[in-house]
Image (cartoon, rainbow, N blue to C red; front, top):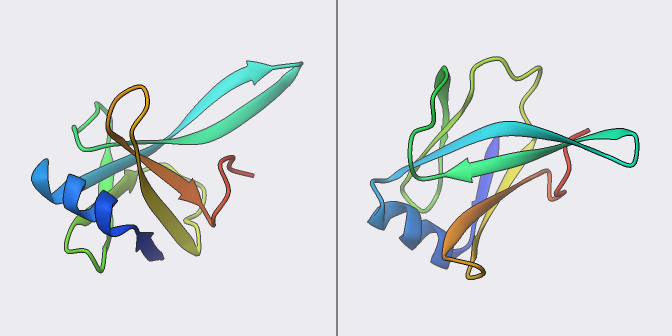
Length: 96
């Protein structure tokens, strides 16, 4: 898995401990189940495994029971409503 992170996102993760935790989240909308990635610099509950180190110098931990890993994990920094990291699976907001 290749980690593609913006300089701004890399700096944010490093400022907050150097670890990025990524897990799947699901919600129902319009009779469909939508699955997306939830990224955080705070360790959530559950079992995770280290899957990659980003070029920006931080480690990425993914939820243990993922059926597969993406080819690329894109990481950006959001400024609204608060500064936080966002992760995208192979460049997409939703996981197939």
